[in-house]
Image (cartoon, rainbow, N blue to C red; front, side):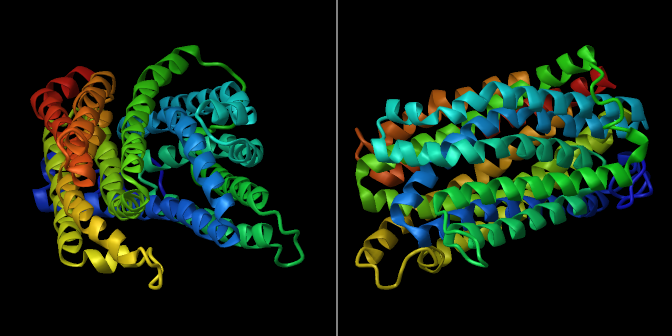
Length: 468
């Protein structure tokens, strides 16, 4: 494996697991995972700054952006499965020093992303009708479609960025993944400032400006990641004769990636549906829910980054047929995630008003009512942080073993077979309201963590040997 960031394949981050103590695996996972955590936080910041800046422009535009963004990312998450699929595949082939397979898998993930974009573009272009079917007003549907008809073209570079960032992460080039995402976040802020409000001689375009800023941000990231990949990993020749088909690898990436996309979508839809339930309880519970979800999502990015690191290290273990590396790497990921859980739980329980208050105007007449509801929700968030972290890290480990179909079924059953029914039952018939909704979510995530953990620890070595 050639890497400017990790030039020694036998270093702590990718060396043979049987030669490293657990403390060495913890250090290696931190070196690999912290830039990925930072990258996820930077990506999270892009969405947050979009909401804040368009909120300064107008409340109606903020509502339309929220609706359009949810629609966009629902479609995007399903298509992102092909990008996530190649991270373990690249890690495995890198451990075997098989440059040809790395090229094949990355190219076909890009092919699938392009094809997916072509297929879903009509859903974005004609999104107004879908909004009307979902019960939105004509004004809201029109504004959302106005945004999506521009921002929708940003899905192509966004998917390309996802593929190439996961390709680089699989090669353990994680620092550049962080800096490219930070560059995209900075470009997004400047483009929003110029195009939403009409600064620096630009026209004030409002929500159209936000859409153009989104496309600009994704285009900047794509240019940077292509430039880096072309310069730093020329041996893979990803873009040389890019048009040549490779149907065998195309099918493999599709078979691995589609379940990943469905799993990600199932979890995202669970939280989207929980917002609908909270909306039934009233404006104040919904506002408290929205703030608590933002806080919990920010801390979840830590576990997501560690899950990605677990995927890469498990993929490396598969490439070397090294079960010791697999087990110790898994333990290291779970220990680090557990430390992050302990810190976030302490914050949620000890200073909930401080955290929630960052999102509420001090002069807002509903401030105290929102804080009162929010305290209970953050207490429940403290509970589901633990189980959410456990399930996402185990999903990452199973992806490293290229095991995605059964985990998809297990996760979907836990989320929707238990989590959502429990959220409704506890929240409404049993009268626990918002706390009940969140407790139901926690139950679903807990069952997912147990099922996925059981599959990994019971079947991990067997799957590893079968794939070696």
